[in-house]
Image (cartoon, rainbow, N blue to C red):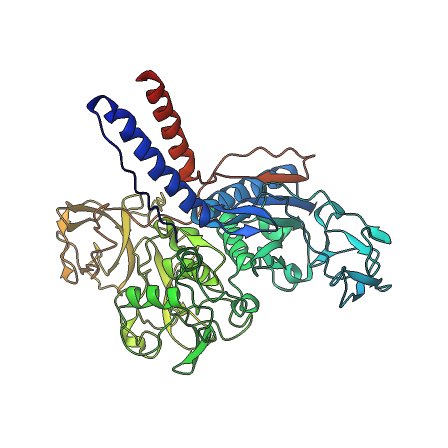
Length: 554
């Protein structure tokens, strides 16, 4: 604990007051600066600071044309920029070096060189270290040497120490080849995993492979969304890393409230026969979002396929970390997903960067066990996505159960210009259009209720709808209205919060773009983003000013 306890007995003269005031502030602020520095953890003898996460991208084999390479680089720049704006980590002044996982058959168990290598492993592959079959450059790897029991220098240096990666907290190895995962499922755009962890358990290296065939037919915003999804896997959102989560969050460690003697419960617990992630921050955010106050509670995890490494597709519909993320404009980086990284103990998280997320909001604890609390439909039925930006078709949301909802598909967007040219259609497609359940027709015959795209506007919190060749009509929430002389009705949405919110706009999509040039010959790239400035910088500026002031009034 930092404490300043000075007793100064002075006879104060009026003309000395400015000097004494500055002297007092000098002592106080210097003490504050020392206190701040005391909270900075030490790593390998060097100060470690909490800064925006710095990611280095190292490109490997890219079976892509020049334009596709540029698209990939642009997408990664965008994703990494967002990651750096959300997550802070303990950053070392030292270059990032990956510790070799093999090569040493036996270590010294005693003496001066305890834990250093005593014998080489002759089976250590000549290719060196790999990250999912991607060869790691020797420059990124630590030294491999054999030592005597008490020698000051190694007896033999099989592999010298690499120069490492400066200003880097995480290295991402990127390739684009037709892997077995790409070929067995033509819908896969990319796959990824982590490779190395530091002494605190945080992943410091990972890879992602982009499937060339899928890349060529994917829109840029979808490429960005999937790369964000995969990068979050490499950073910690995977079953294999959940068990490595630290006892306390970074904020608890820094404030000294972390009690490592507490019994650490398993992060994955069974609730209502479903595996759920129940860690402190995740449980807090889930309770707040779903408005659940009963018993144990946490978002359910996928229970089939890549087990426990994604959210359940029904309970967390629309989240970036479900098994099959939907269209980018309907997929969101929610607070519950960010809470996973807070609970890891490896990251400080800026929740203000989370997207608005509406699925299941306020529905209570029974979202998984009671399908009536979520949107339910009959398979194949046509309607509206629950956010009303798109038309949709009824499908299963999860492989684990039979719960259904309206799922949007390409070409169903109401907000995209799409003039069908048909004189019979009453729909209007534009940036101001939403999907409404309707059976309106200008014919005498009745129509089935289905999703239709009409113009909308909000005024003083009220919703208005406009069908082709009609005037604006008020659409009270949850009611059915008639429009002009048309046959049929329009069902007005029941939810106001994402229809006529204060912004009166749809939620912001996950991806965004930042320009970045990558020539065809460029094979590596490094992206380093903003770091925090210590409070002592500002204090020292003030102290310099104060010293100058004292000099003037001598």
